[in-house]
Length: 118
Image (cartoon, rainbow, N blue to C red; front, side, top):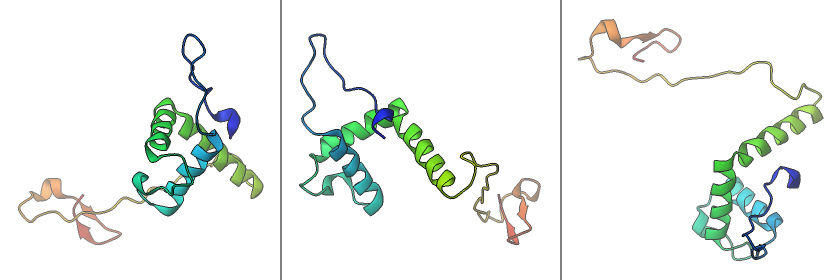
């Protein structure tokens, strides 16, 4: 994943070195994703949570998180003997019941779930 990460930000005179290794930042982000904990509950053996969150926000806004996701998905699919890119997708929307006061012309009907609504 290291080649997918953006280069370290530096100031006009070189700037200061990053205080925490990027590997620990990535491990902390994976920890949050895997456990579902909030940023503030990161264990103390990771970098401080504001630092980890700052990197995640930067990488997300810059598109790095999406590129990493695409690369990991491709690797998993190839290791499974499939094409790197999926050939089809599936969307399963949720049907929501509408009120009886909504006109029938705009209400809709989900025949598969036998529910009136959109």
